[in-house]
Image (cartoon, rainbow, N blue to C red; front, side):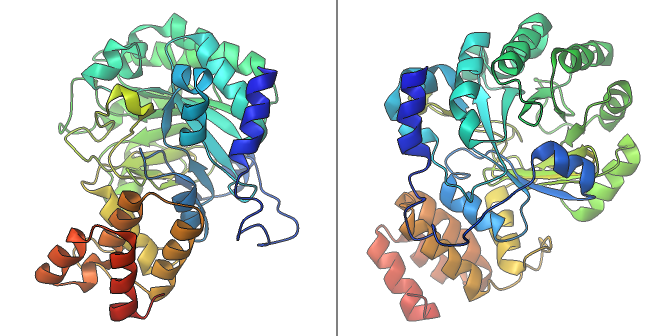
Length: 399
């Protein structure tokens, strides 16, 4: 474990000596539990496979994001492979507060991973909500909700390995057909030491069916830790509506692939935007080591939370970022993207080495409101960093 920590120290802080090292001489931040207890609204960028990596996390932090999550990482690959660690977890001192999300089927794997990242993060999160067949076949995701003892053992071992109370150990689940089973599970997980619980208000067999907000309310009323609600939140009006339905004290929105979470009060609501039918995890080849959570963007809000489902979240979050530094854009009349946001993304993407597909994809959605169909088709067809930069320079004077 000491060897792994030594390897990680050279990987996770790799950008501290780069162009963003001088942002400020002293950097301080509040831990997640402090934010839950002190702020009415906590904005969190949730895990998005391939997208919520360091460059994008630093971008959303410029737009009033309070907490960011890494993409979900498979814990056994992470602890066994230096290549996986180098690929899946990169951070810097300004990337806080940060929660690292892992998929795990063994307590030791999750605890080992938590211990490795604990010097560089403010918490870890266990995914128990992914309904993809490949994930459940490997013992990850939603299959864990049928194994409450194992879930509790995973949480307990991580909690024992990283005993600092301010370091959060959280779980994300789907509900059972019988809500009594979910309440029992949540109470057991709370007793095991979970810091907060995110609840997708559908069973593992449901995709586009209505979210069971009544079930989320029952869970919220049955535990004392923060509860994050998840499912079908497409606007700030939906956040208020779900708050009313579930009795939560705040809202936590998250939009997969590029998930934003906004959380208020002690708990929050998690909104997720499904990318395929799922609104939860997209299937990713096992070799990729990462798990993907709900489509492209997640917003979480509040003392308790909701996970909103909005197709093509990535587009919404990029549009949202391009709108201003605090609001949620109108889906039907998206604003034109300010050059500032695009400039910031170009600067971060280039200086931190964002992969071209990631760099290009974000720009597709940022620029989409400004482009006609032919222009979108042309821009989306570009295949190199130089061609994208030439386009931005020619059309937007961005260099």
